[in-house]
Image (tube, rainbow, N blue to C red; front, side, top):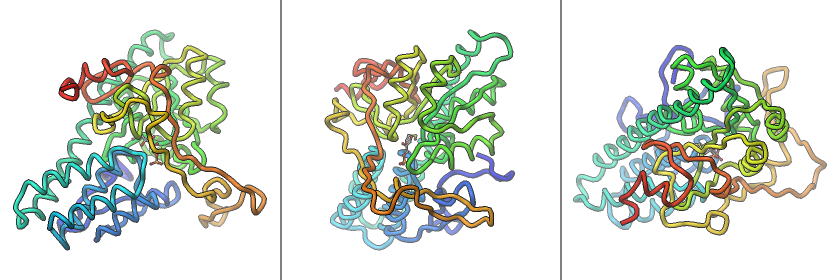
Length: 365
Ligand code: MRU
C-alpha cells in the first residue's frame, strides 16, 4: 500500500538481505516509524509488544524470526527451541503456529548447511502467499459489496462496519476484512466504513482509521457501543471482520467485541461476513468457544489509554481510579451460526465444516 507516495508492505527483508524491517504499529497513527529486527529475540519482542499484530502478520514475522534464529544455529534441536519460543509469544492467532511449523518442517527436510538460505526463501514465500491470498479475498469480497451496491438507490455508498484492524497492517499487504473495501474502491463502487474504535488497544482508531485516511476511503470512527444503534437505524449494509482463528466447523475467533457485533447484526438482519486466508483455519478444532485459547492481557491496557496531547507528545493517561481491578480478554468467539459466510482466497463459503471442506477438500482426507 502507498504511504506518502511510497509503496510499503508491513514487513520486508532489509536491503542487506539479513535484517527484517517492520512498521512499529504501537506508534501509529502519530509516528510512522520503521524498526529493524536483527535477532530472533527482536522478532519475539515485536510480536509480544505488538509492534506487529494481526494474525497473518504475526505469522510472517515469526517466519522471519526463524530466519534470524537460524543465523545463529541450524540443528534440529535449535529449530525446535526457536519454534517453541516463537509460538509462545501470543496464544490465539493460529497463523503464528502455522507459519512456524511450516518453517520447521521444511528446514528439517534439508541438510543443515542449506537451512539458512532456505529459511529466508521460505519466509519470503509465506509473505508472497499471504499477499496473493489477501488480494484474492478482496476480489471475492468485492462481489458481495457489488451486490449490496446494486440493491441500493443509485449513487448511495455501501456502508460497511468493521471491528479492530483487518487492513494491510494486519497482514503482509491488502488485509483481510479491508481487502474487499480496497477492491471496491478501486472498482469505483462508493464505500463508506464504520470503524469500531476497538478498546482496549484501539486498533480501529489508531490503525484502521489511519489506513483508510491514507487510502482516501470515506469512514467514520465510532465508539464500540455504537454499532448496534447504527444497525437498528438501517445505517449498516454489511459487517466484515477478520479472524485470528477459525475452527473447522466455522466458529470465528477475533478481537474482543466481535461477538457482540455479530449478535447485533443477527438481530437486525445485517449480513455478517468474516474474511480470512486458509492459514487462519485451525483444522484440529471444532468448538471454538470451548477450545480456542483466549489471550489474557495486562490490566493496564484497560485502565490506561494512549493518545497525543496538544504539544504533540504521545503519552499514556489513566482513565479509572488508581487500584481499580480490571480484566482484559483480548479475543472472543463468534459461533458459526451467527456468521453469514466466510470470504477466503478460494471464494465464499458457509461458516460450516461442509462449507470449508468444499473449498479445502484436502483437509477432509
Ligand atoms: O491483537 P491484535 O491486534 O493482533 O488482533 C488482531 C485482530 O483481532 C484482527 O482482527 C485479526 O488478526 C484478523 S485481521 C487479519
